[in-house]
Image (cartoon, rainbow, N blue to C red; front, top):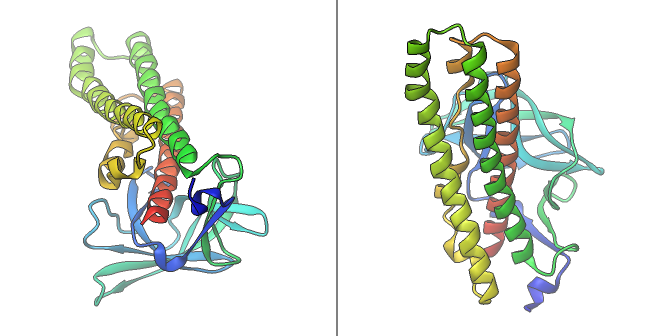
Length: 268
């Protein structure tokens, strides 16, 4: 085991945050990428440059989730409102200040310290960083599997409560639900296969990071389910509960993805 792996904590300077993280807008659950530029005790400054593959235009007052714990005095915050926004012509990017105001306990010992202005990776409960990486990969594959199960329940419930005719519902299921299911299954297969390969490499004492493609990971965790599409044709409260459950699993997946990005940055 290397000296780095024996440490109980890794600390990376802000300058290491060179890869985009995933965030989402609360109003419509729309995910987007962002670059972390700076942070203070009360919030963060992010950039959404033109070259990102998944981007949104944010407005002042928009509620967003940064899906990464920003920790100050023992409290973790990852959600808040856009306090201000401007366009940077030179960088060709929208720059936003986000006032963080919602606390939650982090899932993994991976966070950004607003006190020391560092990215922190805690390893005290793991033999090495690979152990933490394997746990996150396993969880992210299980979350996608959970979404598949929820969608099956949702589709079954539709058949009992939908006001569609049998013919119209068959079209709705084939065109919309089955398309979403295919996307979920494809992404789950990718994540499950990645976890299996990571396990095998770990057993052979090989570097797991060599098989990680952060862009492919992002594509595999981003949303396949659009709430507005369902809400426009199926206005039933129970259905919305299923949809919200799906969105909750998506949010957890975004948290996992950002954790993986942090671990990847630490390997550079």
